[in-house]
Amino acid sequence: MNLLPMVLTGGTVGAGVALLVRELLRPQPALAAALARSAPGSLSMPERDLDRDEVWGLWLLARLERLPGVRIPVMNLALLGRGRGQFMLKKVALAALGLLCPVLVTIPWIIAGVGLPFYVPAVVGLAVAGLLFVTPDLAVRDQAKRAREEFAHALSAYLDLVALKRAADAGPTEALEKAAAVGRGWPFLYLQGALRRARLEKIPPYQALTDLADEYDLPGLSDVADIMQGSATDGAAVYKALRARTAALNTELLAAQAAEANAASEKMTAPGALLAVLVMLLMAFPAVIRMLTV
Picture 1: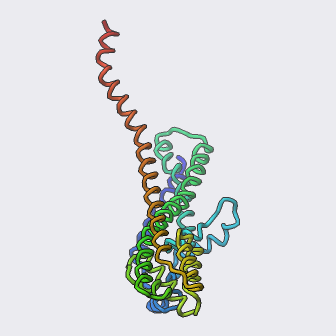
Picture 2: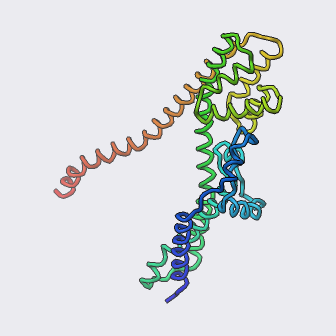
């Protein structure tokens, strides 16, 4: 009997148990790192302490980033608040799991005495590993898309608040800061951090908003910065401009939601038609059998 699959299976099970024990016995984060994150050094996004997973992932990234097909969505990960190292470690772990899956599946065949060519599990393992290797990229892309849609909805409310502050004779900087201080969701926290950084670094607030939009590819935020920049330089009345931009943004969001709903409805058309065909076949089956047996 070939002992190699059994050894690989035992090693895989042992590694899983060791990983489970390590997660259960994970130490508490250091107090110094937590205090460093609360300091006003990084205001747009707090820095994450490098745990062991992040360190191992960065070690893998330094050795695999030059390989073809290895890409790290830095902007999407930054928007979601995730580290590059953990992302790379997850990709490599899933790829390794994909390589081991065919070996685990062929163990019952080997025990039953059925021999398989070596290239069959090897080819299947490489295919599964490649599929699992790109799965985190697809998941991060979808989550970042949802996050940007959520930010666009929050930006619509933020535009209304800024317009109301400007209508109450508040200055451009005051209107932006007070409107951002109203919200408690993560989009408003990003806005608050950017405006706080602008105040500390003595830069115009619209420049901080532009930098935030460029850093995370946030839709519509650069338009707000352009409108408020015009208000700060030539004293233009921006209430109508902000309200018009809010209406346009709401129209875009509604159109995107309608398109998504139509796409979901179209995806349900094929299963519904298949179900109808199956029901018709079930209804006609007794009659067809009776005709053939007569």
